[in-house]
Length: 446
Image (tube, rainbow, N blue to C red; front, side, top):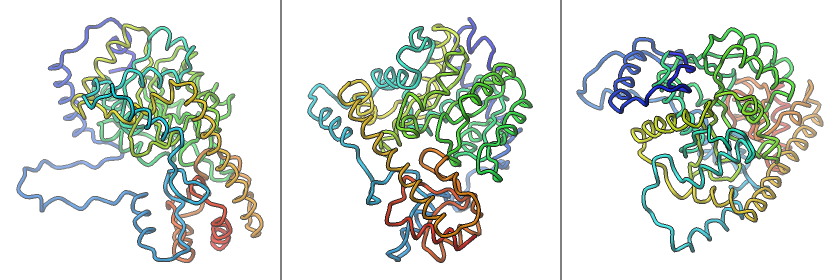
């Protein structure tokens, strides 16, 4: 079924819980028949013993962290983790977060009761306005269904389950490369995934012509996953003019955008500027989904706080979509946790706290930019061949070096530098004292 069918934006009745359950069963059976381009088929087996369960592969990033922690060298360097570190290389709890938590703790009216299935209403409204802008037409007309989610990963998973249940057979196009979890999230929901070109290794920049060529071939009604800003892992974003072209293509091909907004405000230090792409699409009147995370921009990694927004064609359609998102959440984790939503909701709605947050946010992004400049200069000072300007033109937490898996392994073995095999460096984890060693290591493998 096409995502533009009446159930999304038309006037059809809301399916019963029994109907949804039946649909989910059909989708699971269909998924077993079709499989996924990123999942293996499984033969039917009944339980005999857990001894038959195979060892799962280690998570790529967590595996690197494990090796780093086991390394006794005092010179070891971790530039793999996708989390901000301060100038001393330590995890940072924002001062505004500490203040918000004190306010929450001292508020005697707060309880530990369950939140509604859709989450904290105050947080949901504030998150919607933060994403699209308070004056957005979609916000004013109540065309956007917003639910609290378990950070960006949970928002993507709920959105994928919603699409798979109501529009089975939908193809999902994801950039090559992308965040390592994207294919797993959509594949595990029973959706077939395909890649579109994004990275040009010859320029260490965007392969825009390849991206457009691939998306032009996407069947009508396909989902296209787009990074709002600070593309992970490349740090390469389309220009404003290129986003306009992507918008026109999506409209012409009748594709369904699914934005992943993991870094709003954390890319440039300006939350409104970082939301430019998603707001462009909203102003054009497009239906779409947007997953939000507050892990990076508020440093709330362990609180697992985020949101899923579904932009529809009318307030009536948004109400029906909300009812279906609640059904997905109820069966998946019942309702979300309170604490992260309370923190983020308070910061987003209290003018003084919000301004303090924006100041700290700008300070984090400024430090990352400084590390980019110093890392580029240090690499160039080693006499490393090639053009290293991409280190400062890329944006956000990561720089995508183009180093091979063999080169990365050599840096780990000889210099105790830990990073993913695709050559991605988390600039947010770089500190001034480590830059000379990183630059020397890079030069050694060229």
